[in-house]
Amino acid sequence: MLLRKKLIAGNWKMNKTSADAVSLVKEIVAAVGKVHDVEVVVCPPFTCLESVARMLEGSALKLGAQNMHPEPGGAYTGEVSAAMLRALFASYVILGHSERRTYFKETDAFINQKVLAALKSQLKPILCVGETLQERESGATLKVVQTQVEQDLDGVGKDLATNVVIAYEPVWAIGTGRVATTEQAQEVHAFIRSLLTKLFGETLAQKVRILYGGSMKPANAPELLAQKDIDGGLIGGASLESRSFLELINAAAAVR
Ligand code: PEP
Image (cartoon, rainbow, N blue to C red):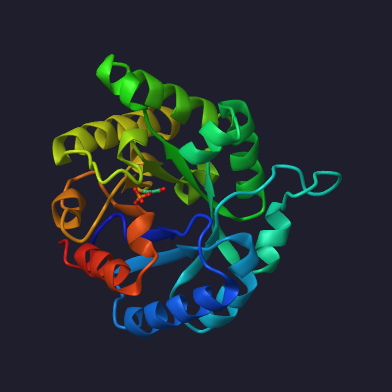
C-alpha cells in the first residue's frame, strides 16, 4: 500500500462565477466517481464555495478555500475565518500562495498564524512555498524554502503534522508555462521531506504529502508525478477546464 495517497488540488484563483463553477464541478464529479486512488480537491473563490459544496455532496471530492484570516472573527473587513470555511464543509485551505505573498505582502509570520488557526479548526492547510527566479539563479532556492517551511510551520505539533500538505511552487513556474525539470522538483521535494523529518521525525515526515505546482499540465504530469517525493499537484490554469483537470487526476491514478 502506498504510504501517501496522491492528491490533485485545483486552485481556481479569481476565476468562475457561481454558475460557471457549478457546471465545471458537475463535470468533474461525474468523471471522478470512477477514480478512487487519488484524493481530489477543488478550491474555488469564496463566492462559489457554497454552490460548489452542494454539488460535492455525496461525492469523494473535497472542497478547499484559497485563503483565510487567522482570527476567529471581528473587525477584519473583507476577510473570512476558518470557522466560516468549515461551516461550508471546506476541508482544505491554500495558505501562503506566492500571489498572496507578493501582491498582499503576506509574511511568513502571518502565514504561520493562519496555518495554526486552520489546524485548530480542523482545516488542512495546503502550504505553498517556493523561490523566485532571481533566488534560484543566485543559488538561494533551498535556503528560501527552508526559511518558509520552518517559519510557516513553527509551533505545529506532531499530532497535527500529517494534516499539513506542502506545495512546492517555484514562483517562476506559476502561470508561465515554464515547468521545473523533474530533477529540480524532486531535489526540492526531497529537501522539504528532510526538513519535515527534522521537525516531526521520520515516520510522520514520510506521511506528509508534498505537491508540485507550477504549469503542471497533462503532458508533463506523468514524469513529475512518478518522482519519489512528488505526491500530487496543485494545479492553476489546467484546473479551470474539466478535461485537463481530469487528465491530471488520471495521470496521478496511473502512478504505482
Ligand atoms: C498555482 O497558482 O498554484 C499554479 C500552480 O498555477 P499554474 O498551474 O497555472 O502554474
